[in-house]
Length: 282
Image (cartoon, rainbow, N blue to C red):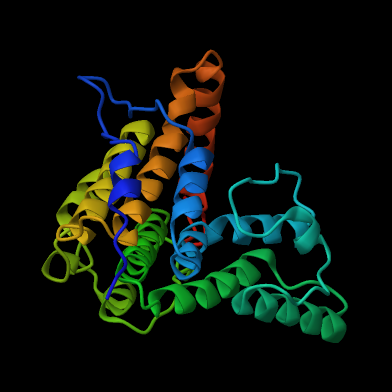
């Protein structure tokens, strides 16, 4: 039976996607403080679910490290920078250790690292295999949904660019098979999922900023859907934390340097639209 945390849940902020009529999220919070307040109250077992939810940050940092990418280290993950820097350190989640072994064996055999996109795809296959098999309901359902959305975005972008380059992650379910074989505008997914109509309306939007806002609305609503009958469990806390991550993505737009960040966001969205990959972290 799931452990209840009534005092923790009562103390978490109530985040709403829209603030008044503006296309902004409420942002009177600190994402890392929310994470820390949850970790301070939950059991060791439930703390692992918090780390699972944030593990894409570790994935991002590991790719940054291995491929020497000139981008800032992301805070909020479970793995400290000095731990990942020592790639011989095997005190890591099993999927990360398996990925590092794959990189090392490939380098030993080929005297070079594997193609970065191919390696990143393999890392995310290992990652999704772990999380979709989680015994925690929120983690399992959220990351299955997350993979489906990323795959659909990648397939849609590939069709728009008229490329046969397959960037789907895991091809062992009905949705990925539809993405590979169905030629209808929605890949036949309106019959497969409840969220497909809303998703394709977002993808068909020409305004890239509006597109991303609508995609995040879809993610936000899915959190509520997963937790419909949850009240004081770790799943509720995980939902709040994931909403805080979504909100955190947008809150900088209203800060003093918002215009510059806004321009960078639009530039990044244009690049992503041209080179969509399911491994792109949220």
